[in-house]
Structure formats: structure tokens, C-alpha cells
Length: 332
Image (cartoon, rainbow, N blue to C red; front, side, top):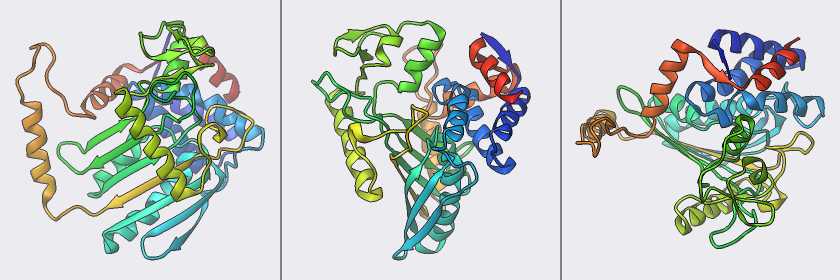
């Protein structure tokens, strides 16, 4: 493992994208999202994904110059064709449109199709919530999760994120409906670490602790039948709104050769006037709860990520040597 400063990581990754033909303003957006995931301890959505982004550009299945095109359907529904653009670039462009619309309409929704992997949802939720609005974000993925009671991957990891304005920081939930993300499985494989019991099945549908074997198998839904139900609900809801692919037909977030055909949905809502202080007091009550273990204070969702971010900004991010060497080679 190597320790890399955030400044060096930003400069090197930006150079790598620039050499792949990415405009500087788009490269900045893409690198920021990957680095923020790394800073917050989400290596599964971090810098290990940069080489694949560049491979997809070179293979012609990602257009690094577009922000996508959108049309309003009715007052508050914004349909976006991502034109195979970089996920964060298209997503932030769509969010800008619907955030402005929500100020007058109270709510606005963006349905996004033909857009590359948008990465960690927490950053989108945080940005919207810091501007005083609520965000609900939903996205789908390749079929990586087995149905509850099944042995084959048929459902996406299908994350959901919610951001709500609060102090000292917005309330942020960002979670996959799988027990772990496939990106985390890849990260464990890169590090040569074993998975935990119950996380995954191998290609034959048998339980495995081997992260490399799990990459060819399936991961479990969180919360058993309930997580399976929520993940399936997100799959069909997003596909209904975006006319995107379903199940094993979804491609393009883990490979370098297929056009990305999953869907993304963003819902921006204006909260009730003055409610942020009320929410903030309640969240502090949660944090002040007597912990079951004195050495482990009670946190609310998002706290741990911000603590990790502060430490990473001070001490740097840790990357497997081959990941960093690969990025450096792309930058050269």
C-alpha cells in the first residue's frame, strides 16, 4: 500500500484524463468524485475506477465531451439523454437544472439514461443539501445480487442516497441494497483479503470467502428478504422512469466495452421553511445517546465518512501500489 497526498492524486489523475481527451472542466468533476470517495473510505468507488473510465473513452463507449441533453416533460419532469457522457458530468448538469426548477415548483425529477457510472451518490446528496434542498437519488447496476433464496445474480446493487439540510453538516444516507458493493469485492481482491461470511456466492452459486471467485458470482442483498425487496423495487422504479435496461441486460458500469444502459433518477425537493434547525437538534439528540460501548460513540449516517475525510486530508489516501502505478502510467 502506498500513501498518496490528495494534491498529488488530483494532479496525476487529471493529467491521465487530459491525455485521454477529457476537457479540463470535465476532468475536474470526474476526479473530484473519485477522490472524494477515496477520502471518505469508499475505495470501492474511488481511484481504482479511473483506469476503466479511460479504457471506456478509448474504446468509444464513453463520450468525455458531452454533458447530455435534457427536455422538460410537463412542469417538473426532466428527461435526460446522457449521450454516453461521463457519469458525474451528466449527473451534476442534470442536478443544476432540476435544483433551479424545484425552487419554484417545490419538486423536480431528472430521469437519466445513456450515462456512464455516476459513482458515489453521497457527494450529490451533500451538494444539494448544502444548498438547502433535499435530494433522493436512485441508480441501478449490472445484475450482481442474487434474489433472496436464489443462487444467481439477477438484480443490481441499486443504491439509494438521501440528503437533508442540517447543521453542522447535512444528513446523508448513501447505501447499496446489496450487503456490500461489487466495487468493495474488487477492492478486497486487489488487497488480497478474504470476504466475510455471508457476503457472496461463487460462479456455481456456493458461498465463498474468496473475493476473486466472488467477482464471477453474486453478492447477497442486505437485510435478507427486506433488502432484496427494496433493491428490486428500485430496479423496476428506475427502469420505469428512464426506460433503461433490467437485470442481466444491464451493461457498462464494470466493463470497458459495452455502452452503459442503466438508469439514474434524481429527485430534488424544497423542504418546509425553517425545518433544518429542528432536524439538526434531533440529530444531535441521536449523537448524544448513551452508547452501548463507551469507546464507540453513537453516530448518525454520514458522520463516519466525514471523520475519515478529515484524516485522509491530513494523512493522505492509501492505495494498492499497482493501482497507483497504473494511474501514473496513464498520466505519462
